[in-house]
Amino acid sequence: MKKLIKYMSALTPVLIAALLQSACKKDGGYHDATGTNSKFAGNTYEYLKSKPGVYDSLLAVINRMGLQQTLMDSNVTLFAVTNPSFQLAIRNLNTLRRQSDKDPLFLAKVDGVQLDTMVSYYIIRGKRTTDSLLLQDGLDLSSVRFGYPMHGKVSKISASGLTGGGPDVIEFSNTKRSKFIRNWATTTTGSNNISTKNGIVHVLSPDHIFGFDEFVSRLTFVPPPPNLMTLIGGKLTVLRDNNGGPDNGEGSKKVIDGDDHTKFLADLQGRLWMQFELNEPAVSGVYTLTSANDAPERDPRAWTYEGSNDGKTWTELDRRSNFFFEERYQTKVFRCPNTTAYKFYRVDISELRDGGLFQLAEWTINKVK
Image (cartoon, rainbow, N blue to C red):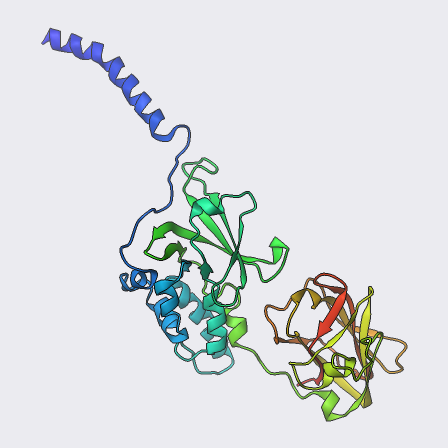
């Protein structure tokens, strides 16, 4: 017995040293937990179908939009949205609709055009594993349907109190066609690098809301009140017109012709205003701008909306900056707390998305409801 105790006493330091050495080898100073690296024998569409209760909503949208074949035979990367992400989006939408005494909406009935645009954000051209997104600034990505600009970047989350000591996650961003990261909407992945026959699947975190921050706004467009330009009538003038004049194919008259497939195109030269003189004074607390057919860099980014009764002294009614349209032919409704009847209204543009050439499909000034 004494010999056994003596033997164990001699062995104890050896065991402690071995355990310490094993622990050091385990994390090497940090916890290196890589993302999922699994293989699925079928194509990407079959992978989604193999997970009942996980991707039911995503499959319903893909089927409705006719994207099955794309996920079967094209080389794509799918940032897979799980059921909770759709549930959050629908809940937010119907909470707002309930406040307006409107019936609830569900995926089968929401606007197909908007749904098609949003689901396309998540299907990216080419196979993009985490290794391809390791650049310091990440990588620009292009959606398979419309070539919409998205972005992916790998980062490490913290674990066991160590900054950056956890697993890889992908920061997946809707760039909203902006060069500035502050304008992006970003989510993260929960697992990465699931390989299928034709692509890669990264699974988004369940707290992501489908459509990023656009789901509710896209599906709750409220038409503006009556257009005073057509209701009362009047005259349009601009600081600077198209080189071909107001009646040219892209002259100033195109911005009030009621057709969003025509546009007013002119040089900004640091400032450009559009002014409308009503036949009689009226109160406008609403106005709209509609993006033109191409070249998002020509969109207005900063402006003021102003009213006047003599065309010389102007009162600021609304001011916008760092604005952008998410897509072409998109009408944005702007509201301001004006209660004064003015004879003149104008939009005074001071900045574009980029460059010096300005364009706009439509401008309206509207009544207060």
